[in-house]
Image 1 (cartoon, one colour):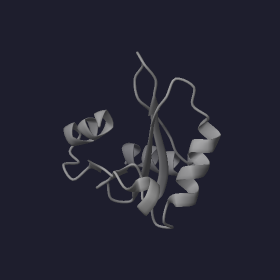
Image 2 (cartoon, rainbow, N blue to C red):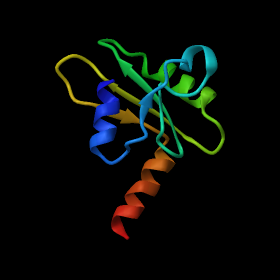
Image 3 (spheres, helix red, strand yellow):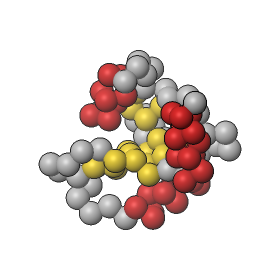
Image 4 (cartoon, helix red, strand yellow):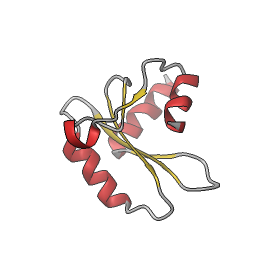
Length: 93
């Protein structure tokens, strides 16, 4: 839910928690076009397992992203490097 509030504040009002993500598919958060978003709030995250989940569940046109944090830390995101490079290139334009 916290991640959804962050997305709302950044201009994604359609972002919402996908309560059926485990049984019905889709990311943990929906409503962010072009992104399959898995959210992990864990003290000890197996990032490779989380990335594999995002990769395997994302449809071909969506970027698989894992947003994660632990207690008393900020949010981080893991995504394919080529997608990050594309975002950086947009900032330079």
